[in-house]
Length: 89
Image 1 (cartoon, rainbow, N blue to C red):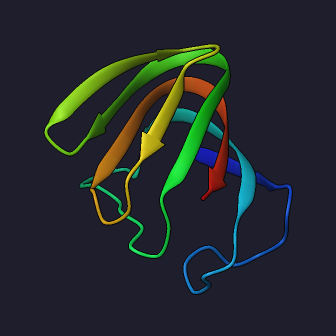
Image 2 (image 1 turned 90 degrees about the horizontal axis):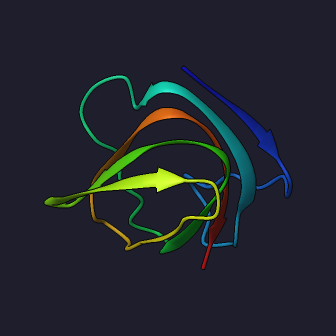
């Protein structure tokens, strides 16, 4: 389950415009499979909590202060209990 608080109200799925949002992860996102964004790269900053990210073929632990660069079109999923700030670049 996840909850999103938009910082900039833009549609990340259908726009080439930058997106900035806070996302709260509690479990796994997406619930099954992987997600990718072919419009933009993104930077993820973990504000609090901990978990992991599977990005492409690698898996990495996440904790408060972690920063991850998500490359466009590279599938990923998130798992854990944490809040993150996501900004498309």
